[in-house]
Image (cartoon, rainbow, N blue to C red; front, side, top):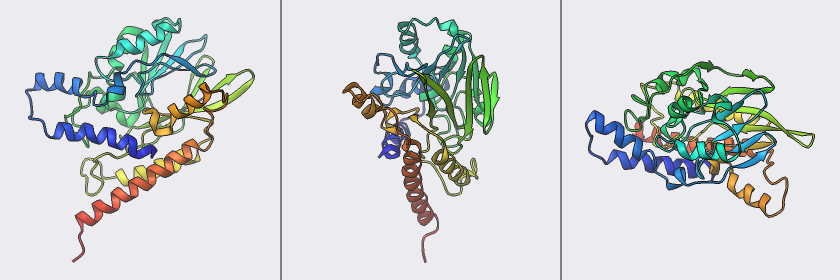
Length: 303
């Protein structure tokens, strides 16, 4: 159910716009920014809280925005939707953290619900923006000419300061993070991993890259001819990762809130799910293969 839930949310977003009349360019930018909020949970306030060790949840209820803190500087992962950065910034301040303590902003992928607030956050924090190398053109175009969505879901253009590629490690003082290239959902879709420690126990945190393909053209896509090969690579990579606490750009991808509820009921280790990344990848792969098979039948019907 993990992948299908995410796919339904984004597919609804796509279908909503497919029925709309094309506005002027200026109106289109405003409309696209506003309509990025297809799911009300994407702007529903959520009190910030510690996930584990130095990893914190600072996003709205429906979008995973994570803060990793250290005395040498903090790292923020993703920026939510355009126009709603104030919710994320208020959560960060509520933790007693100065916005200028954030030195890096990492992006999972170049879609408006995860990259839409990054330009504003970079301005307000002074942080450098880091993203998968293949997503840089789309981020800097603000979502225009997306291989799947064209100009339907634009966002304020993001200036990327540094790029990362497969398996590249980053170090900010005592913070160490690894970028895993998991293309498909976007060409530069990135899974981020790091270690958080608490009371002498260190666990591997993984913000898994989205593996859904909502309304994507998987057969004969001239703008993304390697899309099937890229997804296959990503399914295998995420399934093989060491993953103690799975996180995600959409929390429901990895049953995050169900595990949070169990912890609140007294299960101190409820957020630990060492099979979570593998289960998500397997579910996503099954859904993808079914979608691909249908498109192949539609493209090449039996005579």
